[in-house]
Image (cartoon, one colour):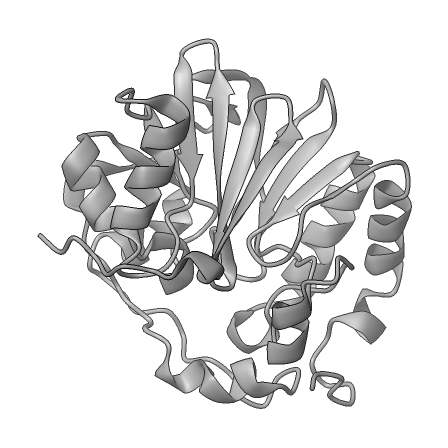
Length: 269
């Protein structure tokens, strides 16, 4: 089993106290999150390949020897499931994903090739070198419940937010309007290495180079905007919280074709 590599401390950023019972960790350019509930805690996404050791140490720091009850996946792209095989093996817990993501998680299909011309920026140019999978978790990955409920998190629900991938999902807690969106949209410009380095918090569309259905992506942002979230935490970028978040997301939804669709002039550095 691959234990991973040592990741320099300057590549790690703790994202603490995002909301009640919600913490996060950024490794390089992608975030993972942990949600505590009455029945323990769950991990949301599993980061980059070869980061399992760092994720385990982070989990031990916050939760001691208590393992998560499950690993929830927003989708199966390599930067969200990279440590997943090791973590599932080590912790002996199930992963959950939308049924439409199963081919990419059970060794059946690769994701469609990326569009390196989408959105401009160095990250788009590098996209053809990113792994497209699949990984094969076999029976260790299970479909999310059709009723929107999440095992172990009674006050959260999952929402199908396709576009970036067919089976992409987001997670929402209505009591305080906390929203974990995976790659349904970003709080940095994911195509730009400069934006990733500076981590200025601002709303952008999903990573353009790997988004497969732009009409669905737009509809998903509109659905999420209707939730009027107070806190949003994405797979890429700095979490955002406060009274202006809902308005910013409304603006992204209204102007999605201008802000997000990659057929407009590149804006990334």
